[in-house]
Length: 307
Length: 276
Image (cartoon, rainbow over all chains, first blue to last red; front, side):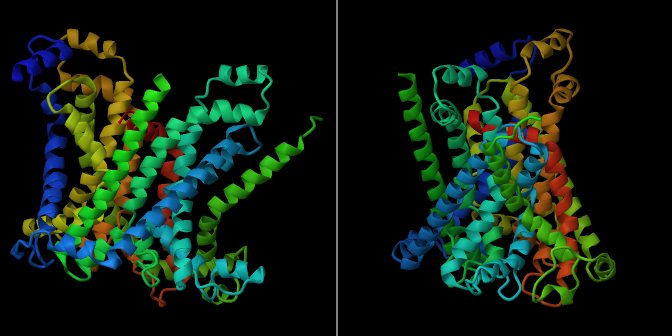
């Protein structure tokens, strides 16, 4: 094996006298860093998940096998947390992707003030999570928030955006979509600008009206970009922490208690390190399965397209 | 005069509504930062008065240690940027220009870090930093943030370097210029826009960090701005105008840098993930 590698390396770097260890000089620091601060903590977290360790004495836990996992998998509150995670992720991804694609299409063509509008539409993405929480916390304020001023003006009465369990998920997903949709918009905008002009022209010559040209030419061109951006958005949503934690803390009455929020509370409020780690691993499995399904579908699509 | 079509007017109104939706919360933050306590309850004015705001700034400078928080945030952000950038430039070059054993695995691991919930890793990291004595210090925060954001910078820089033809450095290589000099004198200047974009992402990852900062830091002199600002949530002593003035001072640098660098950031992020 090492002979093969040596040959490949030398052929590629293509200069005589260069050590075959050269590539490792470049990637070495980053690799060692990731091993020390990502891989080892991950393995250690995996180990914790089989123990009854507590936060203040992480090394003194006893091995208890699958007990932590068994407890979650037979506990209905785990399934409601899983369901909350799925609902949150689904709503945020669908909302952000629709809003992002619509914004990108709307702003792609010439329009008076387009540059200013584009900057305005980009701003939420740059706003730090903590600032997002501060401002939405005030907007959602029961007595004096602007959200209630607005719905009261419409004659709908005051709403407990962050207090009413039936509205908590709405309040949190709304703030999250607001923050992340510009990412989709910018990515789609970049893809739109790479639609070959001939393609559009060709469809015009064929007598296609704007809408059907859009459907048959532009949308298929955008699909790969939208798919990748949706995958990233899904993974990021599954692990989103501060907006949810600071806005509702998982409440009201568990309405926004996603797995990640639950992991943090188990570890740092209940000090149950082992249980928290097991839940974290279950959450990681969720992200992993989404990614695996994505790549499986992607490969199938690629095969179909090449046929 | 050119005739303006109704669909164009409709589209303009549509974009105007979208843009207002995007900017309103920021405008509201600004508005609140200029409105004195009495003006907030029972309906806020759409346009605040100037003399009120001067009075608010007085309170702001004296009552909130925002400058200390911002300085702490800047230290962590700068540390995260420098440590990540040093490793990411080297690794990006290595991944772009060499074929070597373990390359596929390294590339996959870099993507996989995006899947890891911080809330899972923070538990063993907490245990690790406790044993190293790095809790309650900025270096622990820099180390933790670097672990999560450095892979993103590697992707951005690697894909930028993929776009530079190999012949450009070949000429220098024939002259016997060492690899490292090729990297610093030829490749880095050529990919400077992407490196700058990566720096913005790195810097604001440290600047925006709340989870590590609130978990690892226990003494309030070492609070980052995120933790300090979050401490206003649910307390009713500090006037809202003061809270939002502080929040604005914290937010505006992020907005400015992202707006300036948006094109490079987007092309870096997408080319990395599309190929990954």
